Image: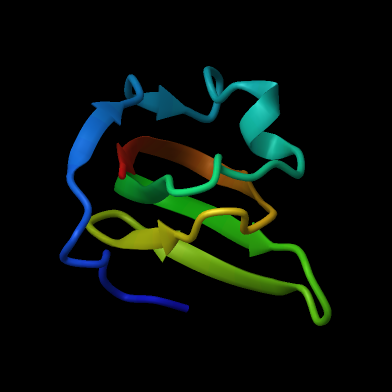
Length: 92
């Protein structure tokens, strides 16, 4: 899993702050980003599971103060594990 975004991309959008009650259904089921779009899930507090579909599937636990990079076209979904606050930043 990548730790950093490519230097050639710039932030163009950001989601609102979500919690375990407001996370959209789309984020909790398999989806991907458009070609050329990168994402960064930033967990502000609590814990969020980040799941990457594939062979083999991979799962990561992201804690408050941590982030994870989403590559273009990478099938993924998130699962809140208790109280959590997070947002998604979008880059291209």
